[in-house]
Image (cartoon, rainbow, N blue to C red; front, side, top):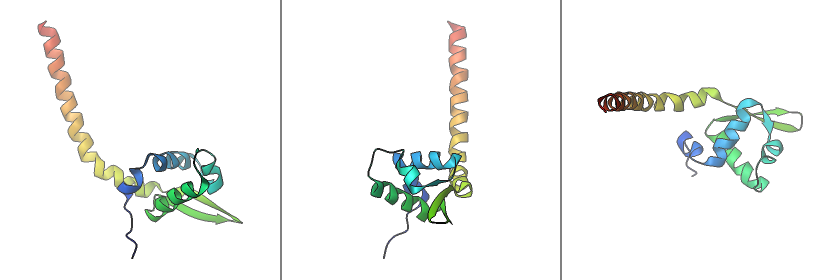
Length: 107
């Protein structure tokens, strides 16, 4: 039995993040994606398989070619998970900025 990978495992890899950035701007075939990387095509194919399993990419057959499309809806789940942390850190950085301004004015 193969365990299904999750989205966070998929985006943890820098190559897969780079693939997502490429495909976010336009749909691409596996060959055109692989041409952007200095690795073997089977390695890129494995990354594409993982991204597809996690539903970050969708496949569409057009003639003999398979095009990969970015699935923004799935990435929205990641953004929704991260949002509370972003808000927390924004608040902390704003407080730090206020302290630094007060410190500068006291000097």
